[in-house]
Image (cartoon, rainbow over all chains, first blue to last red; front, side):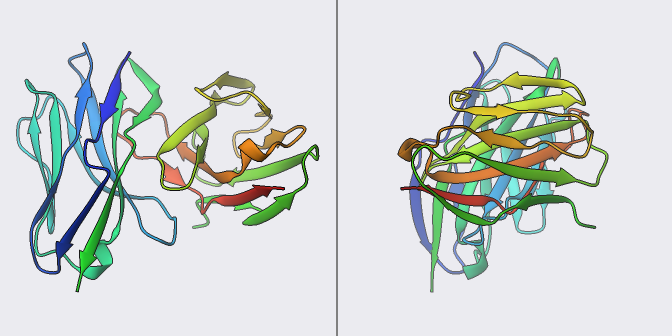
Length: 115
Length: 113
């Protein structure tokens, strides 16, 4: 079965620092997509960034970037110049191209940005 | 754009009561999902649907039922509510293309007492 593991249940960093959230996944498939979602205290889930498995270039969205290591099945999220508004729960998610009806989520990492 | 709309936002049920959580999306998405999120925890898939008339169980379907009579609507029915069903419930939808993100509703906080 495909699984997504986020090994850091909770993290805290000072404002303006850089933080990296870990995500590993398990699949025997070669073509898939990976996503990071953010859930702030408002509960609204928001897409942060997505990565196509067949693209070697790491995706970036402003202060958010990923380190995608396909062979290691690792998909970490780096947040640069962290801001108070980055305080949220972050979920890593996986969609298999052959089973695109299913989204597999990790258990989440709760990130606190400290002033 | 309304996106994914869930009602109600909050509800308190007594043990044994039943209710329906409503979910509507206006993006013509084929795929729709129901998740529950227990305090401080991740998302658990209850049921999902890949189109009108088609539904399938997720990892925690017991105690719930769904229907998908239209593309827009995907209601979740709780029969005989139990304290273990106290949770926040999220509805989500996607187009079905593999690279597309899921859009989530604001969630329904349900307490069973």
